[in-house]
Length: 179
Length: 309
Image 1 (cartoon, rainbow over the protein chains, first blue to last red):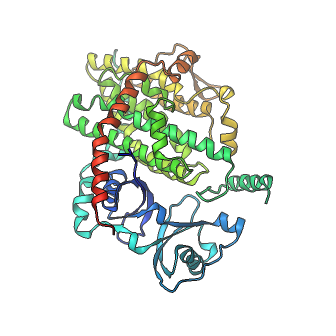
Image 2 (cartoon, rainbow over the protein chains, first blue to last red; image 1 turned 180 degrees about the vertical axis):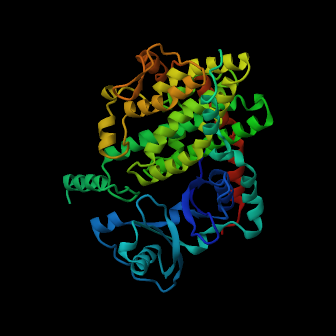
């Protein structure tokens, strides 16, 4: 059997229930279920996650502000009638990541991109991503405790756990030891 | 738009502080330099698990064991963030891992030195992770979006690595005579290899000008090295420890801690594969990859048997 590294899934995590899902990075996995598991291991070693989504990277349709400036808006293909919902993610600031902002209905990925640009405006984003909603695999609310709970019991992963500044200050205040 | 105009527009974007994203136009050389740097950075995280991983079973107590496990696990995660950033430029993880296992790829030369005592766990954290944080904090401002974002994530997590190490060095330096001599020995062995981590002097670093011009790096090797020495050397001395450099001194005029000459013959020897542990590290990576093959096969078999969604 070929020793493959498997397909790529983009990972979106939600830090608080009232915050949008934001792109964290990507994982490789043989299927969506294991992609969620890998995403938990790679991106949730600390207690700042309440929900994860994974999306097959090759199903994401992408457009950047630079592409629009260089080549203009791509033509919107004529629809074949069957439309489906696409989730829209925008990267809105230079230093930021792609955030979930809503959904559009369209008959194809390229049409959904055109729809997203029209709905949210070209001034609104630096990168547009759309993905068929049906391909988004999400963590189950019932599993949130077992998936994300363990990260909460590990305060030693936080730099504030170590009082190096205080220790150095105490040592500076003491006479030098013989070595 | 012709090639020259595109390059001009690209460099104007860099000057305005814009991030370059996958899909955007970029010069081939920008892509090539980034793949080279990011894959080396990823390999360094992965190989970097080995010197510390060896001490997990020998940690002196449960607290130190949990901390070391968490740190090594973070390094594995950091390797994954970085492989992904390189993938956005068209490199595949298969070819990057193949380049590492075949010995073609480079990784940070620091990981080819052995970790000989528990005190090394403290000194590696403070010196090696401290040096890595300076580099990664700079790279968090990199002009390439995915690499910048990976480094933001890494830097936030890595300050714990540095502080757990520094805490250990502080405590051992104030401990028993045996603890003091252990931590002094570790500091003696890791100081110069850490100084070399920043790479050749600027005048011997052929990639530096283009990396700075395109905002991939915002500081040079020598600037970062000086930041490190200024940050770490005075505190090490305050702990009553010494550093193995008779020329190390504070220079009033420049406000810098100055070091003696670096042994570049040693640096190039280790980079070219002749360090104390190069062969051992590569053998460990190859074994880990081979030992995991049945897991990859089983998962692929399971995925194939699932009904199509």
